[in-house]
Length: 146
Image: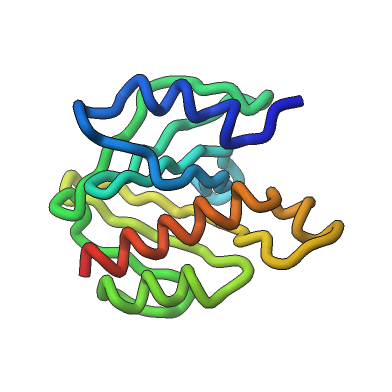
């Protein structure tokens, strides 16, 4: 079975703008309501976050939500509070983080991410090196956007 990055990369590359490249892809669970949710892939480019909903088998389902820094009204990461600098460092410093993004269009995304550090079984269960690289790219994106 292909890893998450190689499975989702071709699909996300299909929505890139000319000259844009994916820096990393990570998996996240998305809370949609009190008892509902799903999975998403978050593709990170220099200028945008690409949020792709996934079906139960991990395949792309529905439209990609493309967000620039200008599209994000507020963001917080597991108690880090609002503000871009706090979000980037919180993502980079934690093994698991809850990222909340409020868009300028009024949409609220609640994403749970695991960084998958180290080696062995724990890292493999957390998504392995591709997941860690994707989460680190996401943290750098928020640091740059600040």
